[in-house]
Structures are given as structure tokens and as C-alpha cells.
Amino acid sequence: MEIVCEKEDVDKIVNIIKVSARTGKSGDGLIYVSDVEQRIKIRTGEKESR
Image 1 (cartoon, one colour):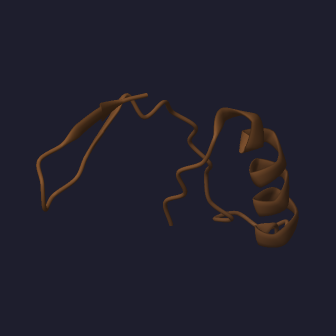
Image 2: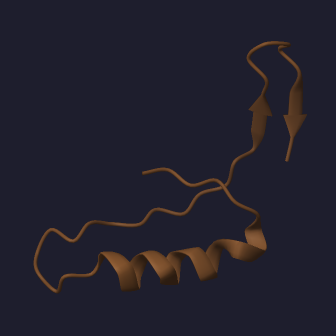
Image 3: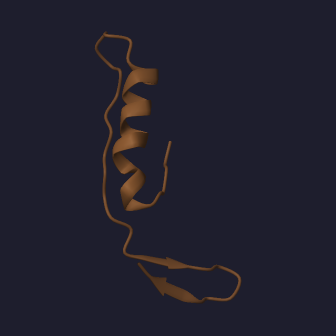
């Protein structure tokens, strides 16, 4: 699963995933948080820096 969101929504989304996905058993998974530095529209090639 990949989720791209605004920076101010990260903590809320991470908490929702932790609560919803937790089984308490090994293998529940990991959450990675990283910055998206740029997006490019495939159709036009237009670039937008974040």
C-alpha cells in the first residue's frame, strides 16, 4: 500500500494504519514515512516540486 498525503496529515494516517492493521503477531508489517520531492504528470510531462 502506498499513500501520498499532505505533511500535516501524516501522524493521523499513521495512527489509523497502526490501529487498523495491528494483530499483535509477528509480521504485522512496517510503516515507512518519506518525503515526495517532485511529481510529474505522465500525459504532459509537467513537473511540480513539492
